Length: 347
Ligand code: NAD
Ligand code: DAU
Image (cartoon, rainbow, N blue to C red; front, top):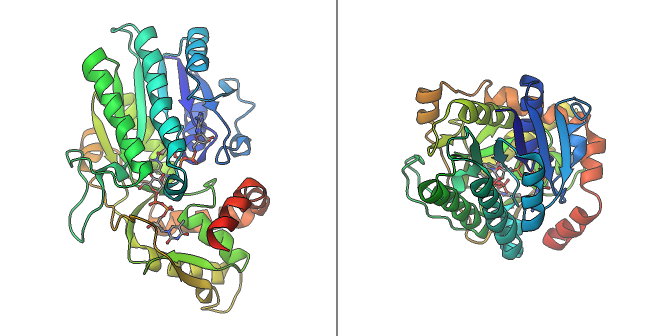
């Protein structure tokens, strides 16, 4: 196994996966295929772009002919598929874009894998997915691999659909798939429309901190590098046709997390204690807002020996430091198209 196509490698999680594979496996040839949407940024990979085993291809997985020609030309051994529209709020304002990128894009990749790979060819089609496919939890319980699907936003419905299609291609055509469903990621290089980098960015600029509804919703946070490590483990040691849940046993109510971030930022920016909390503004709730996500990751822990490598306190501190040290990155990605979208939402 030597030629691996990683889709969405210029995005947040994808860039961490590309970095890990390029550095850890110098004998693999890594091809990063990315459309470079607002969320994709080659600056995320500056540190490895000159590596001999790294290649970048700009392209759109929705373009069936392009995907077919690319596979014909390169004969990839395996695919790690992360490319997607990933932001729930955007899926509420523009669902169709998510259907194309997340469903049609995945089917295009599955179709070429089906037509090009031999059944005994030692290939892997690894589909990277989300815990949101399982729906929303009440106060109790955890998402298990066997939890019935109940997606409730256009984003999660599109990811659920792509999961089902990946499984269908395994059962029907023997395309050798693996799937993982992960909880909320945080860390460096995340586009600042997602909760944690949005709050850090707004606190820095003394802008209001929009809390949806009462801030009671719960998310289960995992450091992105630990997600990339889990993807590495599932890719190499996970069973074909299987699903693995990935999560950090780290549930936070949104408002508690925002308070924590405000306090860390006050300290880092040498502001008087409580200053950043004053920026908190309760805004209209997200339509169909899922109440609670929480992952049972015992299968990957027991079967593949993966566990998170750092605590949330360590990860959050590193993350805050990264955004404070990379103000230019933040300023660049928040200029232009993003500003227009953000202004339309909140001003
Ligand atoms: P992201 O939005 O940061 O990055 C997505 C990347 O995909 C971008 O680089 C973008 O340019 C690229 N892309 C989008 N449409 C494309 C297309 N049509 N053709 C080629 N490239 C395209 O997303 P992320 O947060 O890094 O998520 C990556 C994957 O992981 C997604 O599949 C997402 O569903 C899944 N996931 C994310 C989280 C999370 O917390 N962010 C958690 C679990 C699973
Ligand atoms: O669970 C995994 C999923 O986590 C991934 O599949 C998605 O790609 C990723 O975007 C993320 O989805 P969420 O909707 O949970 O993440 P987001 O950062 O958008 O929101 C986290 C919580 O914070 C959610 O309850 C909504 C709330 N929120 C979010 C924003 C952006 C706010 O209260 N205010 C905000 O401004």
